Length: 109
Length: 120
Image (cartoon, rainbow over all chains, first blue to last red):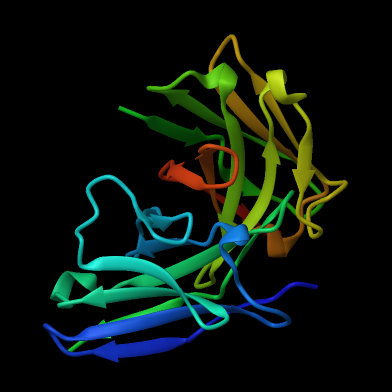
């Protein structure tokens, strides 16, 4: 069974930079998995931030960027703001299914 | 503007059935691949299943926990995708979101979700 791994929680100072990662329990994440990143605040639907590794969705500020770092997909927030405090989920496309990571709770303080 | 509006959620007893609907607008629905994703209370996102466009065969795929119990269908004349849920279990309690898959690999646009509660 494929398990997608994310940090459970992360903290960043306002104005700081943070990188969240998305890995596989077995193997490396590559662009072939079309990694996507979603932001979700309590009670709201997920918002697509990044898809296909590094393509920002329409209206997403350029302080959000995606990449492959080593054997993981990564979401970097540069110049974090208070309203970036949210849950962040990655998902990998497995050909006929999608597998989500468990999510990272980001605190900005 | 793309809009996805889910409906049909509610309270159902274990072993019961429920049918969710997702009404789509703002894009050519008949060409769209659609998916359902759920989120249990206090939990993360979980992919449920996908239906391809009729032009791509209209086939479906499902996650292991729901295979054989859930069925996704579509009505292109009404721009609607359905999720028929049978033999419901307590662990199926979740907010269910529909999503438009663009182009074929990205769960890109999401609805606001509908809550399904399975409880006796």
